[in-house]
Amino acid sequence: MVVAAVDASAAALGLRSGMPLAQAQALVVGLDAGIHPAEPEADAAALGRLAAWCLRYAPLSAADAPDGIWLDVTGCAHLHGGETKLLRDLVGRLAAQGIAAQAAVADTPGAAHAVARSFSSSHCGRELGGVAVVPIGRAETALAPLPIEALRIPANIADGLRLLGFEHVAQLAATPRAPLTRRFGPLVATRLDQALGAVFEPITPVFPPDLVQARLGFVEPLLTAKSLAAVIALLTGTVCANMEKAGQGARRLDLLFERVDCSIQCLRIGTARPSRDARHLARLLGEKLERVDPGLGVEAMRLVVPLAEPLAYTQASASLSGAEPMGQDVSVLMDRLENRLGARRVWRAEAVESDVPERSVR
Image 1: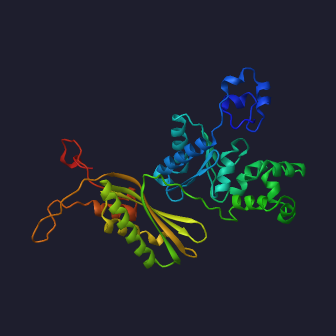
Image 2: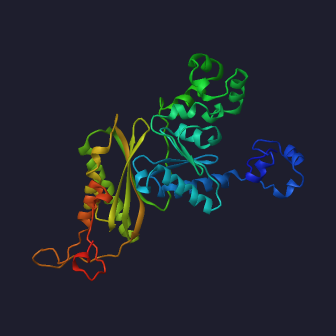
Image 3: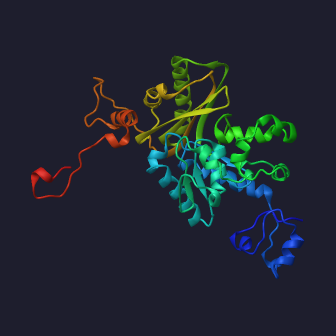
């Protein structure tokens, strides 16, 4: 039997994952009381639930077994005050739940994975309170001083590379790929290219089973904005029908475009009030289509409602003239303005207590 995982106290005593259990018991007297049987299936299920919880930070989240989580925060970090604040909030919330974590943001998943697990060797980016942010275009510099294990290569390959004198990623990056591939196979070159962004690394996102969502796959990839808009109308109709059955309205929607190159592009919109008006939601999504690059084609689209609130049924106006009722709801206009211009660029008047009339509104 071997040690599957250790906590901070055990690591301070010299114990490590992969160590034979008998050796660990010999190193630490009275260790038997702190030994618990490993439960890989339960750990995987818990990691999946944690990845689903992380959807509060980004529309794309995936479990990276056995102890990691991917988050694609492209285009949404500003909603949390920037990348550093997002990571601090994430690590802080996990710590409050008794989960120790380190986090990093980088251009590629491989670089973020390496930096997050190698803080002691990282000399690039802002490293504060268990988080690190690698500036755009600095992934190669951040990876250079890290140990070769940071590239997610098996232990036997890492041992073989060390016998040849390779200690850091920079040494591997400066070595011709052909000799490494002939001796160790293609994995070393692939991991290095993924970390540096030369090879795309797809992330398969997770979706909690209780989320309202709809997905459509296509026989032929879609390329035009008109065809994508038609699919958006179908997806919003399906999602709104499901929300009506559940008595809910959407406050946030994520539209995922699954491209033929295995990459995923996403759009996120928000609403001022819960809504299940399919035409309104489709219009909000359609106005952001210009931000989507279909690449070689989109083979599937998925619409997810990560944030929904109760929405009671409302009776339509019975006006014979067809005129809009007095006090028309302006939330539709607010939604369009905020999603087009940004929430911080839309202002509204608010009453303030003051004996000076000119200062009673801000």
